[in-house]
Image 1: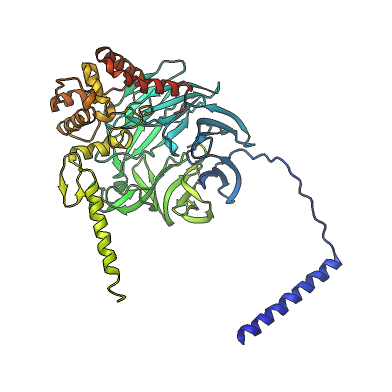
Image 2: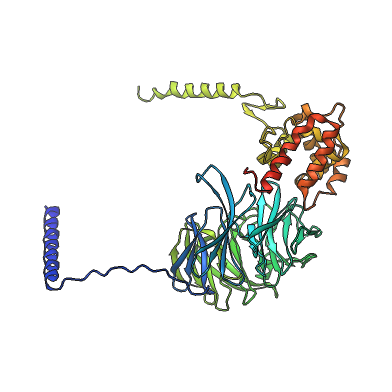
Length: 386
Length: 180
């Protein structure tokens, strides 16, 4: 009985609404506006733009302040993205197959105009038999002249692309080493399985100069994360070990590796060890670090766990001054995050990507969450300059 | 009735399981612990450190990753080839003592490479491994160096010609002539 009377009431209300709208239509017939299609042009790349890898199909350009989508740069699940140092071109190094998941394999570097997102050029690359999306798989020299694409076939090498001429300059084997960390000028370094860096000097032509540092970290017992940060403007890099030791390094033909120091010690916490039952605050995640250019501060995704939990999502972000080795602040995250990025400016936004693909934009100076975006984002995101 | 009914099915399942375990080929060493096959330590180190790309049985298709099965022994035809295998950084940098690495390389060479091994080949010793791994290959054209080593090997052991298949495929990929 109750159900019947409620249904009746609902029907009556609905009928009244229909009659009301019919009456309004008689009084003033709205004119349907025809949509005008146009080609939009984006404003210049701004410090608060960020581009998470989204839904395995693209890098989506967000305005971090407005939380609004500005555009889309297509990229496969394997695609790596770099913004040119002059902020005018998005480069995407990608691997695709003619029949999506099989067929003829094509490796290529794509150039998109950062204002129009028009595909300007595609450069064929030698096959990189194994490729994943990771910031450190692809970078561009600070003068914008050379692209460096890491290949693992599974023999490791780096394809150097002449971006001025749009062609492959040469491939450099980096036996036993991996990834790409560009110098301020004239080459790049890679991390090696014996705990050293290999340093490849290249200025065009066929000649390369290869040097190696002495091993400086323990690749077997406290390896450094693949996701080290490099500031292309200075050629300085921060390499961080699973236990939280920071190796500040100036890259070049003969890199200078600083004495390692502990993130936890800088924060007034016990130094983390490498024991299987050694509970401590530790860095972890898929992209656990970010570096703000304006302040020079390092941001680290931290969680509590034992040694070998370096992929565990972080519950806090620690802002550290790597020059003074001191903690600036700890930021509580709304939910555990797998990856972080920080805008390069003096009023920085922190982008924290949760395991469910949501991105929280956080005002670094207050630690407050400005908004949460349902972005379907993977852990890696691009921000300008870093 | 309802409670007892499933019992024959469970027993049948156990019998099937027992049969399928017995029908597995015995592991290389023949070691067994109950009905679970045990991978010998040396083979386990191969699987963890090398088998992901080179294949569980040392077969990887040759064009992208060199086959070890029936091939790797050829390298021991020349002193340079013998040194090459250990000076490869992913061998030299292995997280193993020189004795353990010697045991693993000997397993690869003598088990997978058996048919390709020159008669009278001596196993690697820990001292030899220690000396070779201290001087890893780190040149910017490692593939060119492999080609050079293989040429030397083929001159001594003409049967080793197939080792060049990898170099040819690699050079083709590099020049963009050939997709993998």
